[in-house]
Image (cartoon, rainbow, N blue to C red; front, side, top):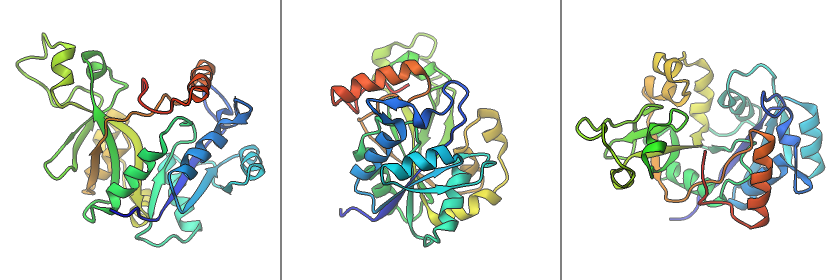
Length: 264
């Protein structure tokens, strides 16, 4: 299968409660956003655009040669920010747009390629994303780990912070070895969209399950859009949310270990 042409958009906000200004935080002598931009470029994307609400981030990105758009500061979600980019760049409805978060400097470029290719291969889907097998009970029952169940076509049936599907007979005594072979899937927060969907997203009303679970992707399911979910054994390394994360990510980059790590 040939690789489709696709655009990567990197939303990058300055405000962050645990690490303000984290796109500009120093990581081995470069800002975090520059490492993320490099991962996107290495994916083979036809175009990489940083979408930010802050002129300091805009200036830094321009400094290392990135294409950057200064977007509105009041977007409710990163998807809304990407929708603004789609409109301002007048991207065709059929264009595939990958959302790569600006705090993911350890995202393997191959996963960016994989999610774009997955959407290209499924004309019935408006969105594509990735999942990886869950390896232990602690991961399965952790609310910060989002689980997904697929149908036989590989489309998402539901995403939840709860352990789904529920094993009625075994969950009271389940062990890690059982979980590792049971087929439970952890959602990886990397998305590809068709531009036409992104144009519709800002007009979609938030969904009750989305508000209960605090999971934006449930809005698409609630309104009847198909989400294609490909399974991968490769996991991204951790993102950057705290100063301690910066140290972990720096060590991983120095050892050239971008994937197969503890994704938390």
